[in-house]
Length: 637
Image 1 (tube, rainbow, N blue to C red):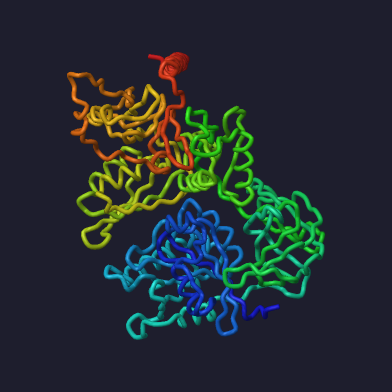
Image 2: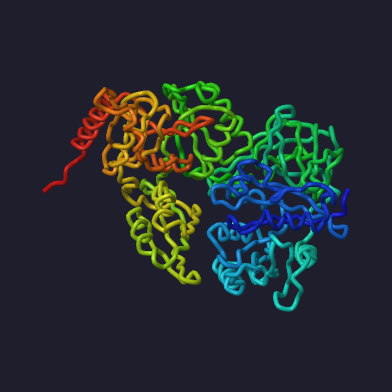
């Protein structure tokens, strides 16, 4: 049992790519967590393949290091706005946060979000100005903007007098004075943590009490809950009570939540963390951040108590509500089962239900369709990560275009999710960016100098307006622009948005594409396929230069006779086809199109493959729209 006075619990929070995971690498080296001859990879906390490929933290992770007989529990949190909900729950387990700010960019949207949550919980952050060794670093600018953000978010006097460190997580040094101290070592960082982070405010003597803040799953053990022990201790095999609570209307008694049910359980398995490894233990005590398995079901916010009194139940955590939804459908295309495992609706549901056990921000809704279900998440990246994981497991399925989730306010008006968007772009491209975002119902809120020949522009824009814009933004800014956004809340419906002004090129034949056909096709469109690639009827093989769909036969071969040379095709010159990534395909498609996801390829197709059936469906829809318009009441002259 560790002395509570020598325990420090803190989380590292920041905007994406501000250096959280790299900082933890330096912490591991400084505390000699690994042997001198042990092979250690970079970005140790990003142990997921997708995290390493994309360079982002997707799920929060917990590690423990020792320094001068102090036990420091550190939680690395996601920096992308789509996974921000995990940050809320993690903050309930810690007593302070390291707020990382890039010395050049300063506070960004996610910085604002996580800081707001930390201040509301009464935490006093430690500000770390990272990457001060970069040529374009502006540490004074970053510090001033951070202080302004504290004041804007209503920080108390104590919170506003935050300790500040400067350093480089990559090179492994941090100092309190950038000009007077030597740029080496991390002692200043650890000493600041020990001095400024209070020990856990818990009671080691009372009955056992903890609350679940995170979930995991093991196929052999079952559901696993993670949280901080708030009181007492629990030995392996001892009995406790699991209490379930739920959030209600904020105006209801007990501050908007109520007690639901309770059941008996035992601590069958218990773990603490040492370094990056979970170590099974026979006893857990107050102040520890632990993992526990035993109850058949565990949900976020459950209270584990040795006392059976329902008054012991704690207020449940708020689980972030999804803002985007899409349909996951069974793959009914002609090439189904050729690249991976063709799954039916039952297998699709089983896989999604497994994901729901650990991904609490995800929702699955069975709306009665025989070929699929509706899945909702926090954003495009949140859903894209799930799709990519399923794809790498060998599954084949189709997905529809993401749609925003709307609500009705008290006056029965439609509201939609609104994003705070910050863009850093060279000055010569700001005009085209403002023009394009205005068409997408973006409202310009501020413009300021962003550094050498660059400008920072801030918008409020509907989430609908950002779907399909990222690739267009990179093209408009020649790849030099940086955009970041976060969900800020629900606002009034902003009207119709036209996201794509070009049609699709749809194949009417099945077979391998030919260079002879693609050469003439590329004169009127941007081609997505290459010669010899197998395509099928109804598959989209390109983007039309006009705002209408165009059918074609990309499998057509040149008729060879004694009057035509068989070597004539040698002179064919083809452009490099545009190969869509998963996210690009999700953004590009329209409501009558699908993305076919397989382990080997990403295909775009029409929902109705047959061209005749597609035309009939369009006519039926046109008649229904005209009938609905005719039934609308006309204004009296």
